[in-house]
Each structure stands twice: as structure tokens, then as C-alpha cells.
Image (cartoon, rainbow, N blue to C red):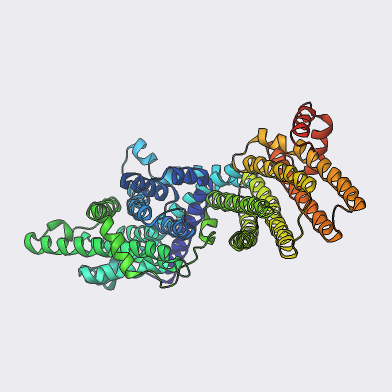
Length: 580
């Protein structure tokens, strides 16, 4: 083997690794919605979790990527540790699909139909179709489909280039001696673990082993320990990913490592024992591409069968390895690992935004109660909720900007823009809740009661604001267009109430029925309540815009007030309900 063959091998390996990475990333984007649906159906049942891990890994062609996603899910609270264990086990079986696909390149037959199954026969067609989709089609999903075909064609071309370049190694005694050395099970496991840890993909590692097996110098006695070691090496990616994550995410990574180490130790020991007793004759035979794919699948299935009944033990074991901290741990709400699957990251943003909306709404409702009776406990609760919404606005805004920079569909981009607009309204509602609380505290401290007439008017306005808050919250949480359509008429009624209450307050001041200090507080209350209604209107208007595929809030609201037949009847209903 000369320097030119070495350069060809390096080029083939580079193309192989690039093609696998490029195809995997495109598969993740293309299957993002399906991944989200699979995750939504996930249950604590072993079979469901196992099947999910198997399917996801078979689709994205990487158990490392699946495990990194699982670490992200656990870190974000999307998945429990018990669910993660089952998914990780399934991922170990799903990753064997790659070896079966690569084994097709070993097909050798004169039969036309069988030769058509050989990748070199159909990858040029896939590459042509892929480049047309990738370069000349604007639809994002079709571009991703083209990228999948291009990635697959590239990795198969790299595989064949690599196999051709290493064919000369069969004549080199040192190469032959190397694989004789790997017949030592411990050395074979170490070699497989190190190679896989370096390239961070067991699928790619198996592909390299299959390419080397094309020389005819790799026996089953050497290949099987190397395959076992590859399962340990692939854990490095998840371990690195878990750095800086919460304890449950670190536990998920340790589950992956423990599962593979225990499985390898048990089956390697049994393999050596059987070989020592029976001297298995096939171990000296040259390993074929097909044989390596079979060995890879059998080993991973055996590991899963061994460890699946012990999932409870695994959970207890990793909890001892990663014990609970003395101080309570704050769970990260949003995890950058989820950005590798944008649809799932967006789903997590929706969940956090929903929690933010409910927190802001609870803060405002508590502040309305505080206007009647304010206690230190209520005040602390309102301020804590306001701080929480501030935190949510910060992390959601930052995360949504990162998400928008990813390759996402037009629908997901619109959804991200909607959430970016809405989180500001949720945060301002909680600010107004604190403002109302401060007004209530000032009234209590200075002993400034309102007149009976003013108290009645305030109760009417508070009831209207609470209803508009509930309507806007329902419109957002349930994507309820009917609730959204009722917000703007009620908001106009609240505006009218505010003006009437200002006028009545001026009359009370002129008659001497109300103090000037109480009048300032009254003015602040009306402003905060009216602006709360304004933010509720923004929320409902944004939901209406999204349903109509527009993003012009003020124009939409104006058209609804002036051109909708439904506006006036709803307005009259609320005007009667909240009259002074």
C-alpha cells in the first residue's frame, strides 16, 4: 500500500463520515414532526419506550444523536429518567440498521435484480435526484429530502472508495498481525471503544470495520470483540453532552454507559467461556460485511434482552452514581441540545410559554383579590410570580432567537415569531399585577378607603378585566378562535368603563367625597387595569393573525371593529353585563 492509496483511504473515510453526518442532520430535520409525535405518545411502558428509541435511531441513523436528544429531554423535563432508560435501550437496536444498509455494498452476483440492490447501482440515481431537490427546489422539506439522498450517496461512495483503497492492506504482514492481535478479546474491545470514542459514532465505526473486512484479513474472532467495544465508545458523546446538565440528565448519560459496559462485560465473558470450551471454528473465518451486520444486531439485541428486565436496577444504580445534591437543583427549562430537532425545541417553547402565561394570569388574579384584602403572603406570592415571568421572558426570548436561526419550516418560523411577540405581553401583565399590589399596599398603609360608590365601580371593572384575562388565556392555551373574537369587544367596554369611572371620580373630588391622595391611587388603578386589558387584546389579536396567516395586529383589530357583524352584538352583551 503506497502513499497514494493512503490518501485515497483518507479521502474515502472523510467522505464517509461527512455523508453520514450530513444525512443524519437532514433526517433529523425532515423527521422532526414525526419525532415530536413519537415523543408525545411516549409512555412509561417498557415496550413503548423501547420502540420509540428503536424507530428514532433507525430514522436518524445514530444512537449517539438519539441519546444526546434523550439527555436534552430529561434535562428539560420532557422525559423522566425511567422513560429515558427504555428509549436508550431501543436506540442500541436501532443503530444496527446502518450496518445492514452498508452490507449491501458486499453483494456479489451475476443476477441483474440482485446487482440492482448493490448501492453502486442505485446511489448515482439517488445523488442526481438529491442534487436536483437540494439546489433547484425551494420547499424546505423537499430540500431536506434531497440532502438525505445526497448524504446517503456520499457515504456509500466514501465506503466504496475506502474499501478499494484498503484492499492492498491484505498483502501487508503487519496488518494481518494487527487483526490477529485483536483476537485477544480485551484488546479488541479496547480498540473498538477507542475508535468509536474518537469519531463519536458507532454506526460510522461499524462501517469502517466493514470496509476493513473487505480485505479478507478481519476474522470473526477479531470483529466480534471490536463490535462489543464500539458500544462502549459511543457513550462518550452522551457523557460530553451531559456536562453542565441537571442530575437526571447526567443520570441518563450514565444509564447509556452502564447499559453498554454491563452488557459487554456479561456477553464478552460468556463468549470467551463458550469459545474456551467448544473452540468455535467460525471465529477463524474471514468476516463478511453481512456477517458483521448480523453480529452487530445480535449483540445489541442480546444486551437489550439482558438489561430490559433490569431497568429498575439500572435506575437505582445510576441514582447512586449521581446522588441527589444537598441543595435543591433548579431544572433548566430550555436546553440547547433540543435545537438539533427544532420541532421538539419549539414544542418545549410552547410549554414554557404556556406556564409563563398561566403564571402571569395567576399573579394578576391575586392582585385583584389584594385590592380587597392584602396580606404579606399574597404580596410575596405576586412578586415571586412576577420574577418568574421575567425569567421566562429572558430565557424564551434568547432561545427563540437561537431557534429562528436554525433550519425550520415556514409554519414553525411563524409559531416562533408568535411566541416572541406574546411573551412581552405576558411579562407586562405580571408587571401590572405588581403595580396593583403596590397600590393596595399604599391604601392599606395610609388607611385610605374608597367610597362605597367607588368600591362598587372598581369591582365591576375588576370583574371585566378578569374575564378578558380568562378569554385571552383560553385563546392562547387552547388556540380558541371563538374566545379570541370576544376579547376586542370586551376591551372596548373596559375602555368605556375607565372613562366613565374617571368622570365620576372627578365629580366625587369636586363634592369633597374623596381625598386627593386616594384620587392618585384611583388613577393608577384605572391605568393598570386598562393596560392589562390592552395586553389581553394584543394576545387575542396575535392569535387571530396567526390563524389568518397575517402579522398586522392593529389593522386586524380595526377591521374587526369596523367590518365584523359579530362585533356589535358581543359589545352590547358586555356593555350590559358590566354597566355602572
